[in-house]
Image (cartoon, rainbow, N blue to C red; front, top):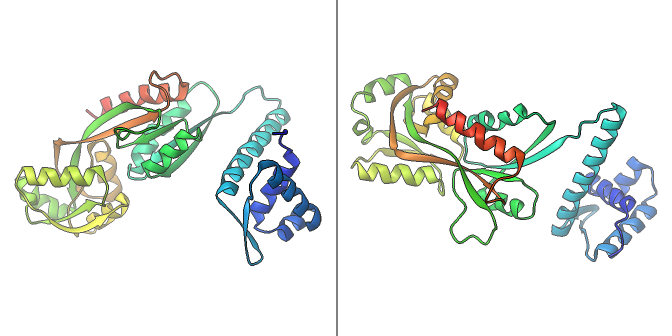
Length: 301
């Protein structure tokens, strides 16, 4: 394949950004006929179409989305180069791309990932949030350097990647002060037949909590299921029932939502992993996060 023509790629990027050849043409001051011809040349070189036409709009197809993501990376690096040269800087912004599964509490992700800025090197943190399945796909195509997850890599996964345990903690149970005061003394039996909010389908926490309830022979009254852990906390804060959260974020939950701790258990374990393509970690940012993660969990023991 011939070398990529970056002018063609820039024209494609403009069309994708503005949604039509006419709009892109007026912004970059190139005739629609020229833009259309340059797009056709790029599609011929790549060997596939990049858009589907819907009315007057051009919509990226699957290959178009892939090409657009790469074009964004290419032009972003170009902007960084110009910024560096303009400011006579010899520092190259070291980019670290990490995926975070959408069930992990935002405050934990923040406390964990903010340590990346303690590294000596100049660094640009790129954080993407989605399901583990989607993020592993990004890891497989080298769009991510690592994935922060509450689940390990699924057994039998064809992906060449490895689990690196960051830390573990127990689970804590909270409620509005008026409820917590009544349930604290006889925890966890006190939760029996009491209103309870649980994590949504597919969550590791949901399965662990339900199994634990069965094991200790209690049946809290499940009055809500939420994928969004913050929404769960708001309902608990309003006094509708009991909810749980990883023990490592106890202080934040009580301070942020004004709820009271009912009790803790270590019979339910929350796991945190960094999944990376390396069995023996050499990536400096992943090494740094693993080291800082151990400290974060040791402070909360």
